[in-house]
Amino acid sequence: MTTEVENRLHGALAAHGLERLPDGYRLVHPGGAGVSTLRIVPVSEPSPVAAVAEIVADYQTAGLPAFHAAGLQRLNARAVYGAYEGVGPELRQRGRFSIYREEPGVHPAAQTILDAFGALLPLGRSTALSIRSPEEEERQRAHHAMPREWPAPVAEEALAGATRFLRERGFAAANDAQCAWVEVAVAGECPSRAIDPAAETALAQVNPGVVHPIAGIGYLATLTLPLPRAPADPAEVCRRLNALEMEQIDFPPRLGAWGLHGPDDLPGYRYFIPSRAPREGLHLTILWWLVLRALWIRERHWAAGEGITFERPPTA
Figure 1 (cartoon, rainbow, N blue to C red):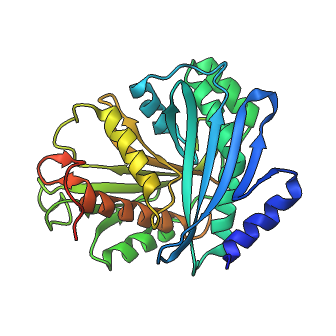
Figure 2: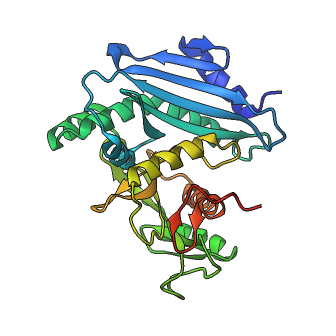
């Protein structure tokens, strides 16, 4: 039995002349830009998730810059709708979205998947091209001409409501007029570095009304980990975290990416959602997705005092 989200996806895509696959749809983009694929993979095991929507952009690499391992993960710091990955000499970008049997937000879930399928390759290719130079970035920005302003910002009281929600659940959270943030302990029990500067807490933050270089205005979300030191191979850490996220069934949307950030190239998570106008409550939803992602790191991929690990068995 298919879910209402799946029914809406099929209803929206059936009229567009796409190549129909046994489990989804395929679109060959004009001009040899690449191929977009949407697959809806049923979940047979007992789970609240009925299916996982996977959106993939396989790029025609002619004309694109060549990305080495670290360059690919720096590119992921700008990713929209999915993480970049190397497939031999080819470039791919991939996102995943869990579809729940009892989905409380049918319309936004279906619309998010449709938006990602339609925009992943065009925005992703332009983002990759924009790395060449400021002039190329400006050409790609002008090509898409995405909105760069909102009629009105997200109200500060709405941001304050999100922080109240998180505080009521035991998290240290705060906001100002532009953003909201929350700390999540990835080791120990101290909820905030304001209490103990040595507390190992990840910082999740959402900034509504940020302008992406290519994708226009929207919501920027980041998750920063309390790394005690730079990993020996930070690009490989990002690659593995992105790959491990994609393996999960019941998980927040995989429409952002772990990538290398800042002058020190430290691993961090970034999620950008283009939006022509503020969407009620979306900032809180995004923050909660980041909280769940931080808790996943705590349970599976963090060693107190050491940082990210891929050796520790999951917590029972």
